[in-house]
Picture 1 (cartoon, rainbow, N blue to C red):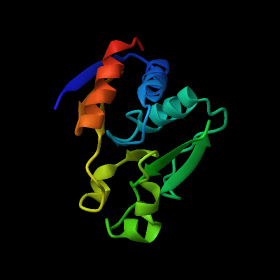
Picture 2: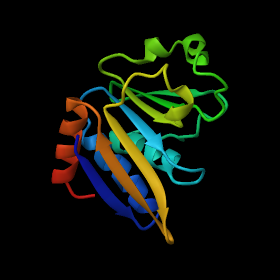
Picture 3: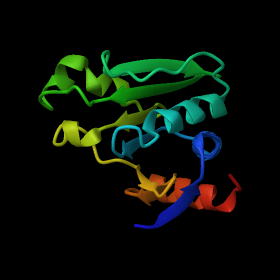
Picture 4: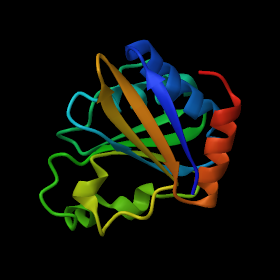
Amino acid sequence: MTGLTRHLPDEAATLALGAALARVCREGAIIFLHGNLGAGKTTLARGFLQGLGHGGRVKSPTYTLVEPYEVEGRRVYHFDLYRLQDPEELDYLGLRDYLGAEAVCLVEWPERGEGALPAPDLEINLAYADRSRRAMLRAGTPRGERLLARLGACRT
């Protein structure tokens, strides 16, 4: 599968990448967000939601595990699995109810749900690069390939 790398010199660039991804995400998708604490996963999710037109607060769902949003008739579920003790907890959370074909699922710390989560359409790895960050995006499905192609064609 193909990939794309973006340099993120500051928070504004991370927000812009999230917004650009929202603009090209015309269908449901499962997007995994990887990275160390403070790497920008929640910032990217906030940019995605703002790119759809969400004007409210976007908080990390560290304690609730999932925050649902409905923006312009689109459903977005922001997961943070950092505090997940066992992937089986996702069954109690009702994970399958969130995975509708038209919903976008942004999943922070997906490795904590390994074995219980479906394969992602897109994986984004956020890493520190000196005083800035780097986003490495990799498609995992044909849907993810379409997302990357559209994202590669636009400017962020």
